[in-house]
Length: 181
Image (cartoon, rainbow, N blue to C red; front, top):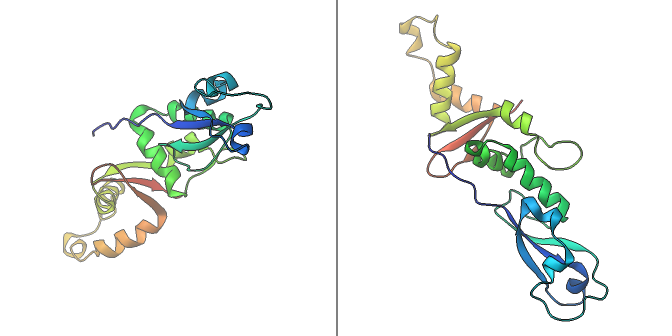
């Protein structure tokens, strides 16, 4: 299995007062430290008065599984959740979230890492490869005579099995497979 590194999630944090006044004042930061960014950090390259500047907001995101505005503290939570997962599983976690068929932690939309680990079935060349391996692992046709087993309809079984799984594209030509529990 090849390990693909996940690019650092970034957020563009801007001053809301400046934004609402028609000026774009902000900088790109790593999402994981977004909750530590100050008004001074954001205004570092901006000229002009800072009177009225009080609130920061993430107005753009890069390499995050969700594409919307958010608070700096929420961006940092996303960064920490992804960093808490073993590096070789991060691409799969992000794909699970992008699928929309993931389990959120608590009342927000941060993914539940324990549910991810429970549902992740691996990275495969295709879902059919996963289905054949699963059939072998569970002994699906182990007690069936060879004369009968050769008539087993793999395509139908694989198609029906797919209803119990979420399949997302992985880098390259492989897929990530997740159980729908």
